[in-house]
Image 1: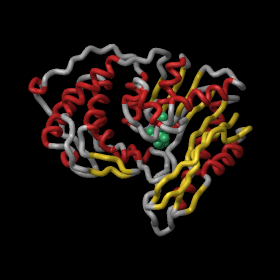
Image 2 (image 1 turned 45 degrees about the vertical axis):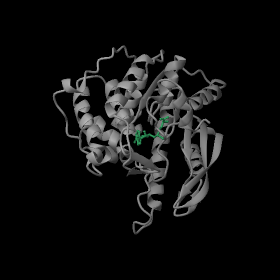
Image 3 (image 1 turned 30 degrees about the vertical axis):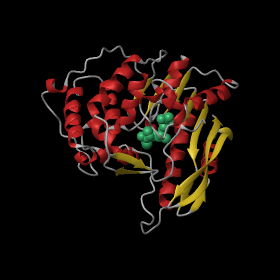
Image 4 (image 1 turned 60 degrees about the vertical axis):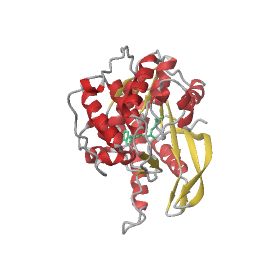
Amino acid sequence: MLFNYRDNLIRPVYNWYPYKEGFSWRLVDRCLSLAKTKIDVNYIGDPFMGSGTTLLRSKELGIKSYGTDVSPFAYLLSYVKTNDWNLEYDIPSLDKIDGEVDIYFELFPLSRAFSKTNYDILKRLRYWVENKTELHLLALIRAAMESSYIYKDGGVIKIRPRPTPNLFNRFKKHFSRMIDEKIEGVKPELEMKSAFEFDKPVDIIITSPPYLNNIDYTKIYGVELALTTLNQDYRIIRGRMMTSFIKSKTDGTGILPIKQKYLEESLELFYRFYDILKGGILFYNVSNSIINGVYYEIDLELMKLMEKVGFKDVKIVEYVNRNTKIDGKIYRIRESLIMASS
Ligand SMILES: C[S@@+](CC[C@H](N)C(=O)[O-])C[C@H]1O[C@@H](n2cnc3c(N)ncnc32)[C@H](O)[C@@H]1O
């Protein structure tokens, strides 16, 4: 399944964090086989890199690549997965750690999401990893999420108290595994910045922007962000995200202005990508949307915008129809891979 992150869960390094919004590494291969019939591909870009699938696969295939994302957590994830590490096991016993940090989370006190034991361990380990590597930090975040009461239900974080594994043991397990796994190749260049500032002269872009739906990345990955930055800077990060989040059922004017804004921002991006690609190819993975019970073929609307900025030969090269539950009703929603030549 090209559009599904589950494929990544069975491959070392690709599976260091379950990023549900990611696509499969096979999608990168599919785009490359389509692109190579038309052009030479020596440089691949992903302006919405998320968990770094495009970049990690490019690294593995020995192709130079460049990626951006505004989320500090997505940046951490992509960086850790694509960097070359050479680390020894160095985790001390807990009683050797002589400090702890406060962790701010905007939605509720984070202590509610853990047993008392696990929360105490988390505060201490987060203090300790501050002077270690990003790989230590990612192993801790993964362990923390698995040892918490949190579960993610669509776009919403929920808490369900239940027996949870010991966080310290999970951390040791993930860290040990991660330092043993490697993918050799050409290291990508990554930047924590907006797709609207993406500026390297790549040959092809393989990317998946946020879809027009109810996922707010700063909320659904809020705990990961809190543990990554330890800052209270959600509003800044949220303000830099592409407009895609359908906030509420009604906001007086309805929610269609969000769709309008989404299309305007997409158009701005396409102008930028067109200029950068200069004879290259854009691969754009996007899903259609249900807004107030109405089905919108966003892929077709985006294809018109691509043609407007000058892209040629714009077509859907892969698609799948998914069953998606919204407000208790099941809808069939198309997810597509659009190919467009500049
Ligand atoms: C669908 S995910 C990409 C998943 C990726 N293809 C993967 O396999 O993991 C979309 C990503 O866009 C990022 N994003 C949202 N607004 C952005 C912006 N203005 N510039 C760059 N990245 C942005 C989000 O943080 C999220 O990681």
